[in-house]
Image (tube, rainbow, N blue to C red; front, side, top):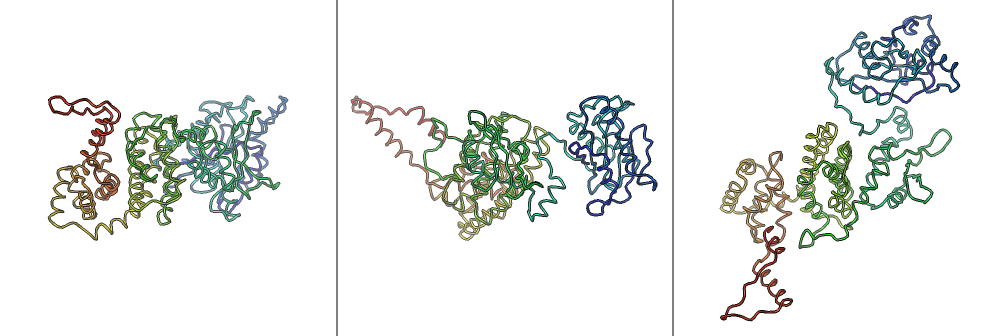
Length: 571
């Protein structure tokens, strides 16, 4: 059940005319009052053919007129309007049940607290099977105004209890991080102008698409303007950027003036104070530490940045930062992906936008690696090769599952649901990305004897998942991947153990496919020759350290540095 409190109005009779009228599409059938305030004595225009709309309007407005007559400052924002709608699959509710529901809603909103004889005047009008409209005038009988602060949250909580008590569809509790649903007026305007999206939806997509491309607020504004977004920047006396509002070209008011929406009204996480820390955290660190000893593409760097995501979720502020940055990486991947993957990745990005924001405050600098990877991807001139893209999309599937689990653990119901929706789109994209690779690998399987040996490697390395892997339709392709890696000097048993340790396989639909993408990523280069590296190290040391004279005809032992020992340990 959804109760959507509308902005305060000033015309009681005008709203009554809508409620008792035919509706925009003749959908208002049999409008009538099902409930109202305790002193209800007005005639119902839906049941009394002699009643007019003026009578109930005057009756509801009486406390407002009295207050305006006594005080100098007149009340004009006194009309409270709240449609309450059941879900399409809910059962039919009688007038008596809707009356009880309306009473609980006005009590929760503080329009008419239980037992308060001096509360506001209100009525609930039903003109369809699945919803009612509650109309109240927000001046009490004693002339005071009701305390409506956070009434939306209280009404939402009441709706969750109503759903439970009446056996209706159970919705998730709100947390004030969702975007406002498009109004009927916005949707009708978009339809009239031939737009697929309302202006705020269109702006949200453009703003999210811009974030991976820029590293400061000024670049952000300039990028939006270059992409055709109308931008109104708010600056302080010093010229510093303090905020912004954005508009869609062609979206004008009745006077022909451009309509602008503040960033925070487009989406809660798109205000300038929320965006700036994210942009700044994508800048390179002053003294970056090399994480790898060989060059890699932005796609491979992004895959490696996702490898430790489950570790980075241990701290809540770091976790929120990484979840937000993960959304930016999905968006960046969608922008640069080939055509056959772009639609699913864009759908995943759109779905995951809801999972990017929660009430947890993010420590944005903790997600530097993910954001740098996203920026590198959108700025790269060339697309990825097939195996690199397949590995990244498979990593995004896993990372989104991990992000969803974190949200579930924190009871972030809306965010967890959004992550699940994103996973579905990402899995479809992952299947498509891996399809050409699977076809190639399946066409050149290793010999039967080699495949039996590799199957034993699977049983030894991943005993808990071995049968699932070996019965996966993609097992012949995985066997080819292991054979190729072995030809480059890798040990199949070790590659399997590393791949399984980095990403659990229990929730994988097709574990062999997951291992293919991961092993192709980690085993793409030949194994280093450790003896040759030791010789090079000894040669380097000999050039920088005085050579000791041999004693008793023996050379002194070479002592490796702590860094080299760590490096060898990682291999």
